[in-house]
Image (cartoon, rainbow, N blue to C red):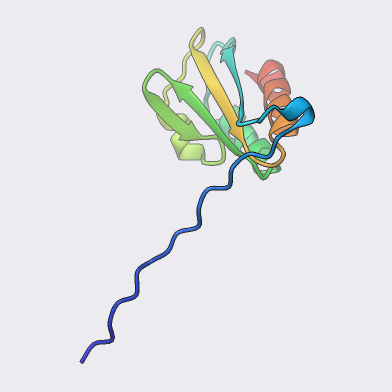
Amino acid sequence: MFPKKQPILLPERQKPQPQCGGREQFMKQFVYTITDENGIHARPAGQLVQAAKAYESEITLTKGDKTASAKKLFALMGLGVKQGDPVTVTVEGSDEAEAAAGVEAFLKANL
């Protein structure tokens, strides 16, 4: 009656390619302490989302035990980041060095 179900094959995660000197590069990560008196609120969060979407890499912000994609406005707002809160920014992907530098520059200029 019904055709036999085929297993769903998910692509394997690619292993990082060795960089100069044989080192493998997995991700870029840094901690930034929010200085804006309103924390991460709607206007700069929207600007951060637009800046993050310019990169192919996956960019996440972590506050405590909550992690959110920098490309999703409501996820960022849900972190509830206030002034003085440290956030860990993690960038992983093909343009991670450029993305990490861009996001760090955005945070320093706007938050």
